Image (cartoon, rainbow, N blue to C red; front, side, top):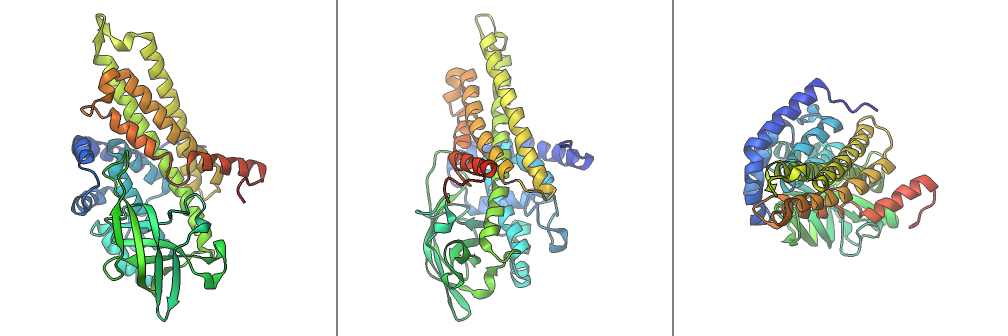
Amino acid sequence: MDFDLTKEQKMLQKSVREYMKDKIIPIADEYDKKGPMAKKDAHRFLRDLVPFGYVGALVPEELGGPGLGYMDWAVIIFELRKAYASLGGIVGITTSSSHNIALAGSDVIRKKCLPGLLSGDKISCTAITEPEAGSDPSSMQTTAVLDGDHYVINGTKMWISNGSIADYVIVTCTDETRGKGRDSIIRILVDKEESPFQASEIPKIGVKSFPTSELVFKDCRVPAENLLQAASGKSFDALQKGLIAARCNAAVGSCAIAEAALEAAIEYAKGRKQFGKVIGSFQMIQQLIAEMIIAVDAGKLLAFRAYKLLEDGKPCRSESSVAKAYCTEMAVKVASKAMQVLGAYGLSTEFPLERYFRDARVYTFPDGTTQIQHLIIAREALGISAIR
């Protein structure tokens, strides 16, 4: 499989990398310490990133989007997550939900939502997880009941990325008139301005600037025309495809964090002196550096392989889970080893290593824990499900 970047992708990578160095990396720690990013700041960052194709990257050109491919997206989101993982999350969620609107929204919904999303003037997200439905979305309890020309939504969503700053939310819920379990699942777009709901922040250990929220829908009336139609006719299938892409995104993002941690450790090891020489000359430090390089290289190969399969339209359920399971856990280990190279300074908030470690730890959970990924990988190999 060929992972070489095209000439255009290399140029894109170079321009994005220079922008991150000049504009994003210098302010990342400052914003991280403030906690969940304010909506006005998120809009400003999104607008600044529009020229690089970040916002709505996968939305086709005929719908006003940049029309980038999955590999293009992997290249640019890697650079953003490496610079500032929280901002990468805000951008990634807005981009993925915009792509879903482009794929499954009616012409009315597309014309209403996409212009604002693609300009950075609007923010979106997807609401799947619930207090009692995480890795098993088919057990969700949020309901949508058709009442005339509106759906009435009731339920609670948890751990919703961008939830508190989103203008549009793609809510996954059940409509039991369509069947039971997976067959009952639908996706409907909620415009917060016309269909208000409650949102409250959930404090967390890492990616602190990335808003993560509880959303409560109580008799929330949404126009029936906001229903998103899956190409296969089944929203559960579309949901699963979305999770595969999300796992690829988590894998690439984790590799980016790990590479940032590795580079910080190398820089420190070349400058810090003990016993009359730089610590990079010590064999144990060199072993840590070598172990980190091997781990990051392996992770990037797995992550970009999964994205290449997506780009080629080939099945990658197992490959995306392999990438997600390995890369997220790898990033935690690499960040930890990088902290060890810095010694006590690795614990200091004056250095970015503690942020990298916290951010990496977070990504082992979303879009299916490491253990769930292992079950998916084994199921694909054995043809036997441990769950159902």
